[in-house]
Length: 362
Picture 1 (tube, one colour):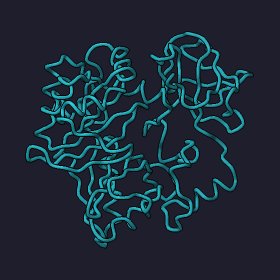
Picture 2: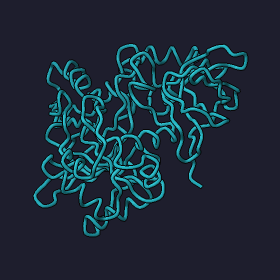
Picture 3: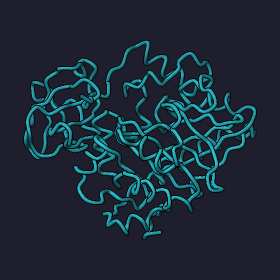
Picture 4: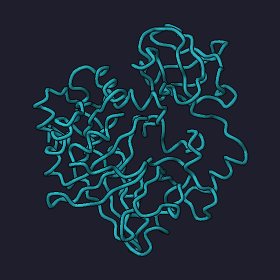
C-alpha cells in the first residue's frame, strides 16, 4: 500500500520506467511515463501497453449462471457462445448505471466479469445481495490477478512475438489457456478504438508479461493517454459520463440493452423512458476554435448564452488538436450540428454537437 492507495502487481516496473504515479479510484497508478501525447500516438500508430490490474475480475459459475446474469445485466447473455464477450451494464432498480463492464463466457458454463476499479466493491456487494439463495458460485479474484491491455494497430504483432506465434481470439473473443503452468485469459477487447487485447494472469506473473510486451514492441502508456484515447472514441467513463442517476438510454447506449427481457433489473423505468422519449441525451461536444483546455464541469451554453448543461468529460484531443467533451444536453439541443459554446475560465469557446466518435481512422 502507498498511504491508503492500493498498489498493482506492476508497481515496481512502473517505478523502474520512471512513471509519474497518481491516485485513481483508490489505486496508485501511472498517469504517464513521458509525454501523454507520445503515448497517445503510440497507440494510434503502433502499440501501447497499459496496466489494468486495478480493474475487478469476478467469476460466476453454476448451472443457473446464465439465467442469473441475464436478470442483472442489460445485454442478452444467451447470445454469447463459449469464448465470446459482450459489453453490458449492471443497473439499479431505477434503471441507473451502477457499472458498465465486459462479460465473457468461458468454457464449461462459467463467466468472467471485468468491472471498473472504482465500482468493484460496490458491484460485488450488489451481486452478492442478489445471490442470497446461492443460485450461483460468485468469486472475486481481483486481488489474485494482474491485467494488461495492449492496444494499437501493431498489437497483434506484439502478441504473436511474445507468445511464440500464437494468434489472438476473434474480436470480442476470449482465449482461456495455460502457459508456463499459469492460467491465462486473453480477451480481444479494449477501450481505445484500436485493435488489441487484454491479458489477465496470476498477480505474480504480471511484471514478466508487461516487460515482455515492451520488449516485443509495445510502449508503456499511462492513464492520461487512456483517457484521451477513449474520449476521442466517445467511450463513456463510469462515475463521469455514467452514473446511478442516468440510464444507458440517456447515454446513447441503448444498443447494449435488451428490453425484451421480461425480468431485467430496471426494465419498467427503461421501457417507460423509451416510450415517452428522452428529455436529455449524452452528446459529443467539439470546440471550433483553439482555447484553454476544456475539462469536466465546464458549462455548455446554447446560442442565446444560456447554460444548458455541463461537460461530464473534456480534454484536448491529441489527434484533432481541438477541445472535445461529452455532456448531457436537452434532447432538442443534442442534434449533430447544433451551435453551442463552452465556458472555460470566463472565456466562451464556440462549439457544436459532433457526430460520434470524434476520431475516425483515415
